[in-house]
Length: 269
Image (cartoon, rainbow, N blue to C red):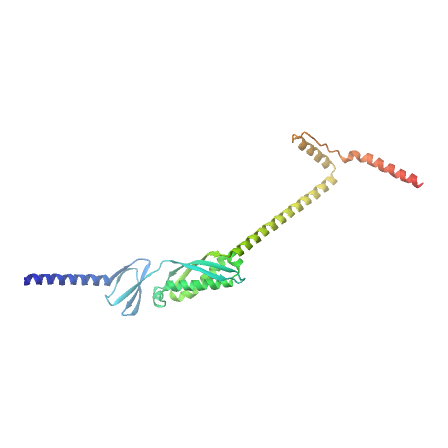
């Protein structure tokens, strides 16, 4: 009976020893992937960043914080702002950044994700307040570049590199949308009137040139007369108009004019 009890105790002791060894080994060795780094602390003191690959630690003495070096995407919540020309807008954005210094991202800031998101929100409202509505709508690339420079300057001490900032959506008030639609319609009408006027001017200019050519070459008028007759005959019309050249009436008009002049001279006599 006593021997069996000792055997059970020995088995329990052996099991505890095995569990202790397994736990120790699990604490002593860590594997980091290519995009990961481990920031090592020994009794609270910073040793530095290690990895990737197999990392050896002193169990219960060293503590490791895993850091991901891949590009991280953060959605900036919608922010209400007033532009420089006093137009209320609601904008949201997306930020792309990555950790380039894992030690600084752990030591110099408590939560780099939350801190970067808050910096992005305040910067977005500030930049929107310094830009006009037309600039925000037409030159969004410029706004994105300004946002990236400001946010990257604030997050650089934390070991964060901002690679891109994109303003995703700009929401305008309904009355502003109607005003912009009316302005666009007026602009299209203005362009249509200008194009119509330019067309009439060019047509008048061509007519003047044609009249000058016909006056210098009277035979051109006869050719145009024949061409018009051909076009009329090809339309299959039941009624045909025959224009009579004014040259046929020139002798009669001249004779009538001479008769009127002689009559006037006779009356004076």
